Length: 256
Image 1 (cartoon, rainbow, N blue to C red):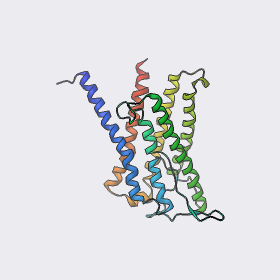
Image 2: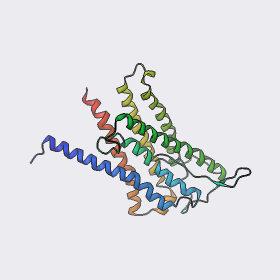
Image 3: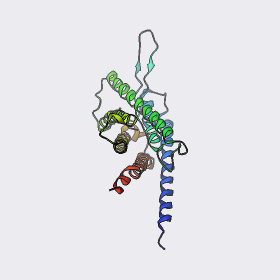
């Protein structure tokens, strides 16, 4: 028996809602699992996996062995040594910032678009702040230990993700002040911002997955658990891709 168009549409919306709910759970559950694994505060390195998961693409170390390296400290004249928390980018923050605009699973679905845009900006700026802090701290950490930085695919994609995120946030200002681009319509600016943001998110997820191939992570997470961890950024990437495609790309194509 063939399904009617209305039934197919309802089933499709239900599947999207289920996938979106799963993405919310992953965005919260993945950093929680990493926190248990890394025991933040036990060393400098212990902050890196957690904050990488909170944000998405780490720009830092791949881990040099089975255990996290000892935490270097920043010693300022006249002050006690200060542990340097390794901050990276945007898994939880970036995912939630994008899911805000999901028509099925947005946590702010009942609020106006103006409120959603403000929340999106707040989360994006927090993600960028984490990214910049992580880039600076991990670079200094490498300097203290006399190690080369940005020599692995993990570090290079993380660096690129940080720079791309900064440019993406700067580009978002054009949506707040569209008059700066007199030859561009607001609809076109939204389309380009959404699609370029999707590219940045996928880049961050790629760096995150490369980080899960590091010696530290593969020594701590093995077997089926490692594959399940790798599925987390894959799931959120597919959900975000579907959301952006339905909101902009498919709609844009149908207008021609």
